Structures are given as structure tokens and as C-alpha cells.
Amino acid sequence: MRALCWHGKADIRCDTVPDPRIEEPRDAIIKVTSCAICGSDLHLYDGFMPGMEQGDILGHEAMGEVVEVGREVTNLKVGERVVIPFTIFCGECEQCRRGNFSVCERSNRNKDLADKVFGHTTAGLFGYTHLTGGYAGGQAEYLRVPFADRTHIKVPGGLGDEQLLFLSDIFPTGWQAAVQCDLQPTDTVAIWGCGPVGQMAIRSTVLLGAKRVIAIDTVPERLAMAQAGGAVTIDFMQESVVERLNDLTQGKGPEKCIDAVGMEAHATATLDSIYDRAKQALMLETDRAHVLREMIHVCRPAGVLSVPGVYGGLLDKFPFGVLMNKGLTVRTGQTHVNRWTDDLLRRIEEGQIDPSFVITHKVRLEDGPAMYKTFRDKEDGCIKVVLKP
Image (cartoon, rainbow, N blue to C red; front, top):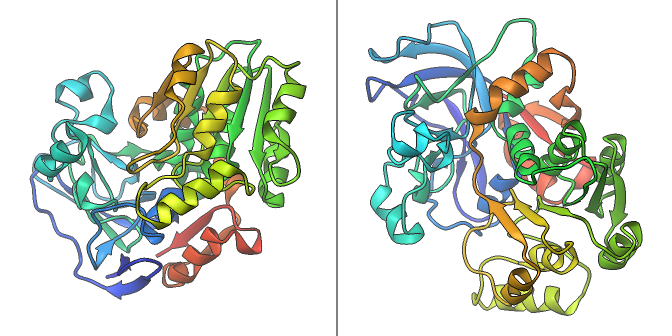
């Protein structure tokens, strides 16, 4: 089969690789009908995430048709359409029973390695480093799904792939980011980053009833999409984010803040931005913490910081004293996808939201390597790429 494979920093290739096969009784194989490039895939493309090996198959947003099931998979049939969540979960461990699917205690087959790095294992993830299990990803013609009796979202007929695909990651990720804010009808929510997750977070906070949503970015197409979704926008290259947020909140700051950027935050040539890039170049820190610092500074005391943006390692100059003295609450983590998908699927069916609004580019799988660069560099108005194997 064809698959997009990692061969090093900024080196993605469409290779011919062996077809996946059933390895465990709870496995299934799906024929991928649609998949996507995610912002967190760019952390692999840019070489910021450790644990990748040459030839690893990328991708964690995929859906398709079941073509084979293991002998213990009784709730899936050949021919059924499924979306595959990026988090692999057993459904039986203590964390899964609590709905904490992204920290499943059993699905990371490199548990010993994860224990050493994280203290305790996380769940296995598709197409995302050997720290999270080294599982082959879904930017391919076929995908092996471990624990497939639980790790799936069965979808109805009558809805197209593009309406459903983002149940795999970015829609529930944006939704969880909003839910973690404990939104009140009087809340102003500031969202850093208007990429795909940020766009979903904007619409999620609107659906959940926030008084006002403020979106921060600098790419014109992203800001226009955010505005269309109901947000007031700030272009951080044109004005001070802190000053503008204070103006919009009468000096009090937003009650809730969402970091939909993560480790590769960009900023104007401020002192902390220059500091981060210098430290990163010298390999003295791994992640750029500009957005986190700005959120901590501007958030209203006793507010909430929600962090769906992916971080991979070490931050420097993190103002923990400010965080503590302002009494801020921080909530973060990989998304517990299946905790939210029944509700989100219902909202799609009822027409409350059509997640396909975020798609700007649809290309063949073999065009994927070039689209990584287009997506990373925000060329050609690119916000979200869907691949068709």
C-alpha cells in the first residue's frame, strides 16, 4: 500500500509499504477513505518531537470502511463506516472506566519508555512517536486499529466523510478545550491560534454560550475564518495583544484563555520571543512558551487556562509565581475523544455545526509530502488539508 512516511526533519515521502494485518484478536483493518494533516503532525515534520524512527507512517486523523476484524471484535462488521479516534484505548482499565481515554493504562505498547519520560504511561496514539507506542498512522491506504472494539466511532449513512472526519481529533479537541473552561454566560474567552483546533474551539465556545470570543493570530485567512465563526479578532503583528485584550475587557482581562498553538508559538520580536528562539537553537529548551506566558499575564485572577496545544518537553522562564498568586487553574491533556463524540455527532446530524468549514485543500495521498510544507508555511491560504488515498 501507499503511505506517508517520516524520514527525518522536513522529509516526508509517499512510500510503498506492506499492508497491515490482524495482529491481535481485538484488531480491525480499515480501508482509509479520508485522512488529514494535523497541526501536531508539523511538530514531527519540524523535528520537535522525540521518538520518531525512519519509515514511521504518519497521521492520526482518519476514517474509512472496515475490511477485516479480529475474532474478538463483535461490534464491528465488514463494510461499516468508522471514524478512528487518534487515542487508542482499551475501555477496561481504571482510566478508561473514568472516561480518561487519552491516558489509557494498557494501549501504549512502549509503556516502559513512556513511564521513564512521563512518570506514568499515556495512551497509545496513531502515527505519533515511539513514546506513544510507535503505531502506524492513518495517512495511508489501510490502517490497523488496535482495541478496535473500543477505538472507533461508528458513523451513519447520509453524511459525507468531510462532515465526519474531524471527529477523529480536531473537533473534540476544540470542544474539550472549551469544556475545560467551565464556561459561564458572562465569560469572555480569549483563544490564541486560529489554526484548525483554534477554529473548532471558537465555534465550541460559541455553541456553549460564552458571552464573547476573542481570537488571536496573524494570518489573514485564519482571522477571517475566526471572524466568520463569531469571534472578535486580534492580529498580533499589528497590535499589542495585552493592550487590546485589556481594552476589550475594561482592564480586567478575559476570564478564560485557550492556548491552541503549543510548542511552536510565534510572536513579534519581543524579548521573550527572541530568548525562546535562542534557547531553542542552543538546545537549552524544547518548546517556545510565549503564548503560555502571555495567557498567564493577561488572564483575569481566578480564571482558567485551557491548553489543547501540544507541548513536547521543557519550557524556560515560566512565570509560575504569577500563575499561583493570581489563583489561575490550568487544564490540559491529549483529548479524551470518545468522551465527546456521541454529543458531537448528534450536533453534526442536527445541523448545529458542519466541521468541513475548516477545509481549504483536498489532494491525493501522493501529494501529501508537498502539502506538509504548504500547511506549515501557511501558503496558498492553507488552513486544513484533507488527503484522499
